[in-house]
Amino acid sequence: MTDAPLIWLLAGEASGDVLGARLMTAVRKQRPDIRFAGIGGPRMADAGLTSLFPMKELAVMGLVEILPRLRRLSRRLDEAVTQIEQLRPDLVVTIDSPGFALRLLRRIAPLGIPRVHYVAPQVWAWREHRVKKFPGLWDKLLVLLPFEEAFFKRHGLDARFVGHPVLQSEADTGDAARFRARHGLPPDARILILMPGSRRSEAPRLLPVFGAMLARLKTRLPHLVPVIPVSPVVADTVAKATEEWAVRPLIVTETADKHDAFAAAGAALTKSGTSTLELALAGVPMAVTYRVNPITAAIARRLIRVPHVAMVNLLAKKALVPELLQEDCRPDRLADIVVRLMTDPAMGALQKAGFAALLQGLRAPGGETPADAAATEILALLNQPFSKSAT
Image 1: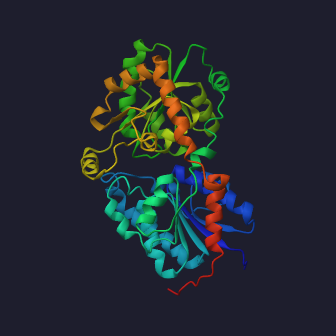
Image 2 (image 1 turned 120 degrees about the horizontal axis):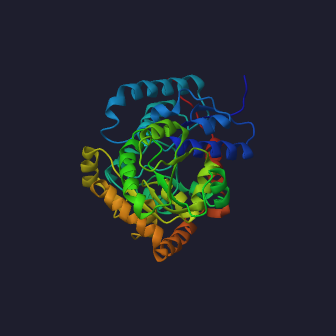
Image 3 (image 1 turned 135 degrees about the vertical axis):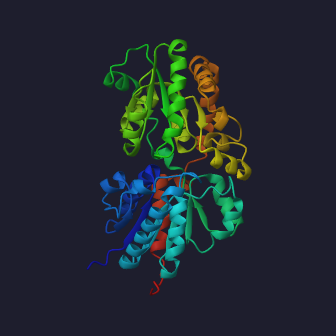
């Protein structure tokens, strides 16, 4: 039996898997003896984690979409709690996925194990009253957006801004010529990035609209080449959904290939979220679009308290990029905005200037990388004395 500290990690979706892998690497830089257990995806597996069960089973969102999965998710929650009870790790770190992660943190509270939640629930955007349920769920909250630290501290919660991980994504290091050469694209090809989402429940809602939009653009932008970067988790779903499209897309799953596509792109259509920050870092002019179950949308509209949905707009505090949501997520509207993005240099230049300004505010205090800053906070908690209670 080893005395090396054990950290139990949870990531429930592709973005959390990336964060988890970077965090594992950063923690080991400071403490090479650390061991890991928990739930993660392929990138965390590459970093040395053996996942309790496939992470893709947790990658679901939406108030209505989650209902058919509740029983299975409940069983998986029981399995996670049981493993933590058996292993008695020195620290538990949950990454994003608040629907599953916060339930897990509450269930394991009686064990007395220090708990960190990495990526704050976006209660500042909607259902702010939920913040009243957070005391006691974690010992430390690591947040990605600079305004979140003050928000949670106003509610009496210990929050630390550690910088946004998009700054480590290397989204701005792509090679346009390499992308064109790899995929045999001629110099006059006009590349459009389409990002329908990394979850199985997201992509099917946007893909039919994207396909119909491309049919409309066939004559308006005759040399258009759509590129869909997706996680391997949904690659097959996207391939099947696009088989009959009038303009067949390139589907890329490798991170380096995605970044090369960004460098070659003239514009992008993306769902809201971190993908907007990746595109901003790469300097790709964009519009944000999204469509969910109508019931989910109706409920969300009554609860949302922020003026914008796109992360870049929230950080810029203005409508820097167009948002076409729900009823506005239509093939004709999307086609019109793509033509503008592709043909109006002034629109692109205005966006790029705004991107550069907002990205400066996402840097971690002290000049560390976001992963190193997060690792420092986690290890500081690990080094504090505590007592694990019996079950």
